[in-house]
Length: 359
Image 1 (cartoon, rainbow, N blue to C red):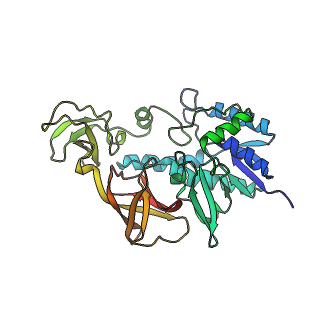
Image 2: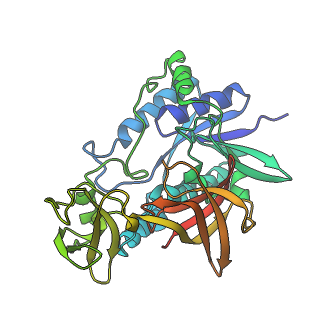
Image 3: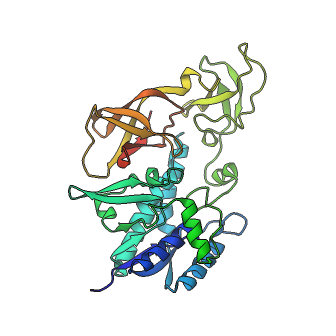
């Protein structure tokens, strides 16, 4: 039988490198693909794409697999970055990694791989797949500290049918051990952080290049002015640092936290105390819903949900659907639920899907 051809998205990091190695060990014909998706200010100061490319090529040479490059910069700007800016302009806090996975890594990349004759694509995500009742299920990665299913909840059956996650059953320490044993040059390389494909940058400076900042008042929920903000786009719900508010107010020295943004009035609302009632929500409304199976979950069944990547699973029920929205009720109030972020619903280890938080 002809070997199945897999094209692995190789970022230059240790995870995708080990993914390529494991696939070759399993008998696949493996090709590496390095994606370049950002060109603005692509310098050594902020972006490590040149070094990432060199690392990917070095690994491909050691593994004895071919590697190609592709530039998706235009697609990234049109499909991901434009949404990123629009959300910030509207006063919300988007998660570009979610959209980047859905539109670039598992759409533009998948289409490109198909044109090259690949049977599958593969990435170094910490997630797993299985089939159940004839459908694909997306499972959490075995390493709970690295699980990335949260960022993949927008994937559909067609995408999952042609995707492999070779390291999803491994712990990060095991991945690094494999890379070290193979003497890969990136075995100890630091995990990438920052905005998907853009990297780490001074965030305020970066946003200010694309959106004008509009300073305004910082108020309490009662309307008392306690400071000035630099622009609503620089703040997120639950933020404590960088508010520039000090002093004892209301008989307490508890720290201040952002609890609301009012774009129409250009007002940032803050409260004192981590557990202030304004920071705690018993429910949320989400839109732009995506369900991996293609079918809505049952209402009133007990599920679990995350409203941010690092959050622990929170027991919840889906109270109901209306047009393109759904309401999710939590067993316990959730802290700093943030419009623009994603809520992702799980049934045990199975990622069901989710949507964008609107309130």
